[in-house]
Amino acid sequence: MKKLMLKIALVTFLFGAAQTQAQDAGSVTFATGEVTAERQPAAALVKGDTVFASDAIITGPASRAQLRMSDGAKIAIRPDSRIVIDEYVYAAAAAGSAVSTTQDSSVISLVKGGFRSITGAIGKDNPQNVEVRTAVGVLGIRGTNFAVLLCGSCDAAPGVAPGTTVPQGLYIMVTDGVVVFRNEVDELELTAGEFAFIPFSTRQPTRVDSTPPVFIDDSDFRFEADDQARTGFDSKLGLRREVDPNAPSPGSDTAGPESKDDGSSAAPAQPVIGIDEAGNPVDLTPGAPPDQRNRSITYSTGPLGAANAIFSGVLDNSSTQVQLDRSGNPTGFDNLYPLTNSTDIASFQIGGSGSVDTGFDALTVMRWGRWAGGSTTIILSDGSNANQDLNNQSLHWVASADWTTPVIIPVTGVADYSLLGATSPTDNLGNTGTVRNANFTADFTNMRVTSSLMLDVNGSTWTADGTGNLGTSALFQGNYGAVSIDGIGGGNGVFSGFFAEPGPSSDPTFPGGVGLTYSLQDMTGSVSVSGAAAFGNP
Image (tube, rainbow, N blue to C red; front, side):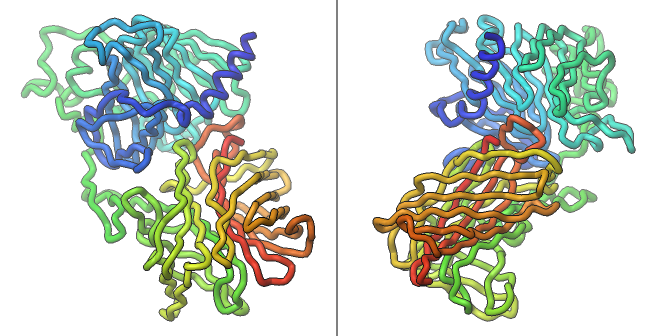
């Protein structure tokens, strides 16, 4: 029964955010740097903004955020983190009461990075209704103050000595109350002053005797100075301490360097964020190294180019190469372009076309859609124009979230990915169809990917099965060796795509998502069908 309940919880972790109705969950009390809420449309967050159930809150590098939830709970989110507010129900907020009901609940998924939390009314009155879900298990609380951190690469975290290798997994720190961590392997209870580590590899919860280096001298887990003074939380040691009531107040002229109200001595200087010519945030802090953010984009259409062929291409774009509209959908990017005997790298602009059929997944943070109508602008590397008429066909695309380090491709294992969403497939005769089924499998042991499709377009059923090879890159391309229309074979096709992070996974060594675009052609070469699909939940 215990394992059954855990499996139910993990399934809810995968799908809870999509099923929760958007309702007020809290507000932003502090934000610095790049802090965004992934929703429809996405929004940059500043102090005073409302956050909603189903929001994914993302902090960029050198960015932090603090939330005050509707029940009074507080959450401090570290840089380069992503949390999803799966559920947040607090009826007392609307009723003007301060007592939580048994129906109230707080469910938050930690997808990347880390945060610290101080319990609110729900955790105090109904702690059984508070959960933190991670890729390796679930945390329950009993009225507490705790911090969690997912370490995929924490070797350069504050407090970690140079040259130290930090084991990959989930770290837990409890400063007040009790936390219970459970997964399919074991259950572990932690009290104030205790730490735990759950490795990605074995998923075995283990108590840690001393402060893990990722929690030492990490001021990113701190709240504002008034919270530190009131709770006695020591951000240097990660533990509760006694506060001398006669000590100088934080921010006073006689306060020590670690207790300044603005936290300037305990944390790096606040970044200065500007906007580049592509509309993307840029770190302008004096002396700061350039923060190169990238976005993987795959596209397909057909016929295209001098070869008048079906085509699917994929390329990583820097922040200066990709342009986005206010909803976060690409309106321009660089990508491969087919020439007669080779490929070029061209600049694609939406031009007179429009973005339609768009979709978004909050956990993998992938977006997809198609440009349709009018003419899209395409400039080849030699400056020549290759504009494409999209009145009778579409250009389909999938884009990843911004990333600063490439996705790491595993060397072993097989992952089956499920369809998250797709564009409506279109042919070159102006017809729009539907996706009946789509599957994607990555065989990391043999460095191979397989894709299968079943589409209904213009009264015909298209099926395609294809394979491609993997390298060390997170990008891939392949061919459909078997394409049939209404059961008659002889067609062909191509596909391309990328692996994306983050996203929940039964095995955290697998990338959380896959973006794929495809283009198929019938046996006569006269009809082509193109589309895009996003996959997740490996």
